[in-house]
Amino acid sequence: MASIKKDDNKAQWEDTEFPLVCETCLGDNPYIRMTKEPHGKACKICETPFTVFAWQAGTRGRLKRVEICRNCARTKNVCQVCIYDLQYGLPVQVRDRILAEEGG
Image 1 (cartoon, rainbow, N blue to C red):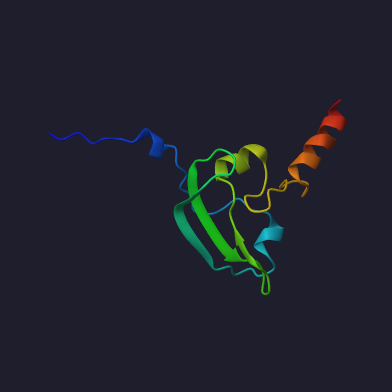
Image 2 (image 1 turned 45 degrees about the vertical axis):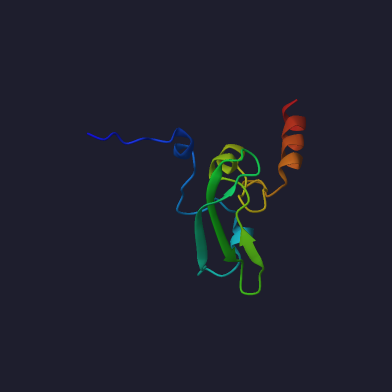
């Protein structure tokens, strides 16, 4: 009987159905045509391959593309496209500085 070999490195690769993005990056059009490329790029933070999504934001917007993996975006609570905080809409460095001042 043949055994099935499992690649542990590929098991960590990300495969998602929809990106984690903010409303600004989605644009004003409620009907978005999105392309999906499985394992199309390596994450800029953790360097693991992830699913790349691309779409046109709004009726006259430019082409938006996912830059970091969903796992990194979820742990930092940021948009995968603009890398801004999902709750406050601020750049991550500004958010961290403000929260550090408030906390200490």
